[in-house]
Image (cartoon, rainbow over all chains, first blue to last red; front, side):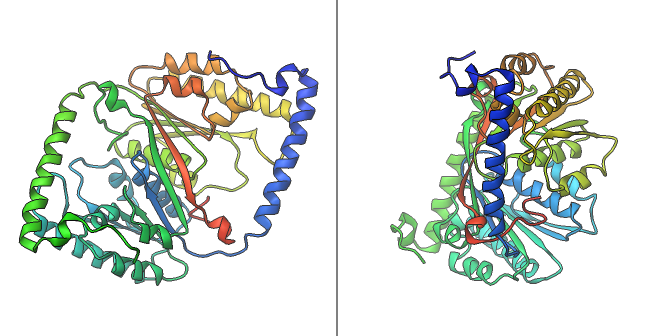
Length: 213
Length: 213
């Protein structure tokens, strides 16, 4: 056990702690209710997951599954072709009526260094993404790893910003990838940064099924 | 468009950029291959998602779906009963052969301030969690919002650390919730902090299906 500063509750009896806790929780609930009462608008959000930590795409996939659970149709565009297969994909394909996945087969990859091919693939993926965003049947569109295409200037940020700013009102769009551009953060509703605090690669553990892919 | 510092590539011709890019990618790939070659161990990880941002549970649910896609059995213990239903749950229930969900019906909630009831619920949830972790049929166990029970000292951190430290070698355990205790971070293999950069509540947008729940 690590050392820690004693807390107020350490000196209380069990009965005193119960009362203290009840009061504290009531205050928290009142504060939360007050905040929620002011939140009345409901509309599609532009969501960005960025940062160097893990969980950017995984949290986005979690949102996709949640949307499926609500009966929404979801479009997924994968801008980067992973060298590893993904377990998510196998599960997503069990919901063919609700999910459309476009994996850019020749998309950006670390393994090939052909910029012209990558540029063409990014353009093709983006055209697909634009069509999905414009289609009101999709309530959610995931643009997985779009940020990496923007970072390498494979797509003009102005065009992407213009499309996202004019997306249909009820459509949620999720963009993932490290190094999100300022222009994108500027127009986003919800931006979360995933920060790596500890990573098992440092301890010599390799990428494994269910965790990395 | 925001101002930015000119990049080296701004002054290059398209053909020069192609060559520059190819060289850069080759270097990146070589560096990555070198790192990956040293990562040989494969074992179950203790993973912690913490921080005040969104995506902690959602990324964990994403990992659960990924594990399902790989054919693993997964156990999920929800330590906090949400006042909102979750879309994830509806989708998870479509895989009854692979997923066991234990939602602690009377678990910790902001709405009730009965500490003794919460203590009993946390204990019951933890006993379920311990049994799942010990059961080698589960390759992944998600302890959703365990951190909040630890933060309120509903469970002794020493006991939790002892159990997690002695988990079966191949089992992945994921713990979510803000304010992860130092003792937990200490023994974890992978810790990611989700940081909120921008949140739509600030703009008066309320919680909605597919995003918050």
